[in-house]
Image 1 (cartoon, helix red, strand yellow):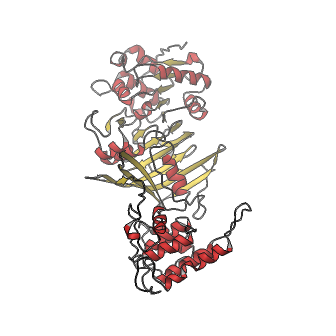
Image 2 (image 1 turned 45 degrees about the vertical axis):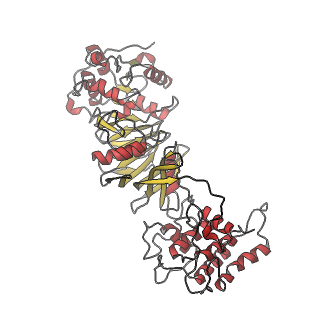
Image 3 (image 1 turned 30 degrees about the horizontal axis):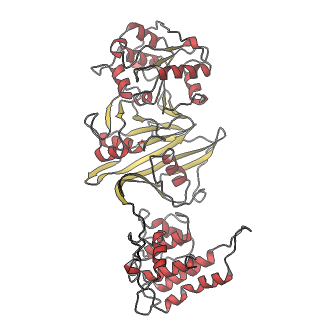
Length: 573
């Protein structure tokens, strides 16, 4: 049974309300065994023997979540007689938020815990019908003013800011429709919070719920709010006196800086440009005033060339649990690639639309990885984010032979196009008579040979912008020695010659290391001889539907390349 405390505390001037106390913003889903977060709450409230903790269920009409929190606090050492559930819910707030007994209950605490539910209910209960604040909210501020701690989980964390995201909204709806003028409109609703955390907007359940980065990003840019804090479940942000933030718990916190971001609405959707993300985990800190991160000393910086991953996979659904962390960490700062793509899609039949999120490195990007308290831990600073609308079409591959594949082995055309090596249309047509640029060939070669993106120098060619579509593939083939520069230039828009193509294939074959595992069959010598010589005749005879003899120093045709890749990859067997 919980004892309701009613202690009388001298009034504290509001001038010291937020400057002395501590806030604990919890992303929701707090596990009962999370000693890092519960321990911080208890310690900041005065310790197990001195803490008097009040739980406020103002975000709900019931006190069930408050009772669960009380059980957890007992488990973490607070005697049950020093815990109270304040009689202030969304259902009775019109009366209780001004009740002197309830106000004294709150004042008598050294720590407060605003339970989860609906942040609109919490704001309504504590701000009052006129939105000017209630005696109960004044009492909460007094607890902070004398150095106490105020915690909130889920909705209880979201309500802490000056402004809050008060209606969830589908992430694609948020990007499509922006800020909603009313709660029944599609989009995201931003409304007034309690003003206890003036640094920015707090969003919760950030690693588990429907791509919440989308709604936070649009809300920040459209409302011209500088900072947003996306807090994962079972994770908290401890806001210490002076404004330094410390991350506690098992997940991470994504800090979104929209200071220099821009927004452009169009007929296909919104384009967001120039957002900057920091991602921090347990033990890392963030200084709001300087916008700087202090990374835990047990996490060294990931040096260029020391990345653990080099895959080409995109994050196919940013709405999945853990997808954002995957994109920023293993997909970018601990990856040889200089960019990572994530998608949010919605389908109606075979037609889909949505948004492409491009996370990219800049000169300010830093990645960190190490062991903190025995657990693997990442951090990332200065990741650029751009968002743009896209459309997709999902079809099965047709069984009919593409008409443009006449004169080529039709299986070769389909095999190369459908494996993503050479861009083709939905029927697998690769336009065999057309020449191919050096940039297109470099991308096809990088995909075919499985080169890691981003390996090698940051700017390998004076005429290839780091942001261009093929830049990372070009970097990869140059670093691997498969293609050359001329006077520091790559000439990406020039056509590749048949001789250059043959040379690149020859280099790629010589670069292949034999299988080291004894249980894998080696490439038969007969097959190797076929591969080594398969494209040499292409320099002397027509390929595909090309009728004129091939000029070794003239532009190579797509048909030549398809046949060469087909045999090089062993798909012709």
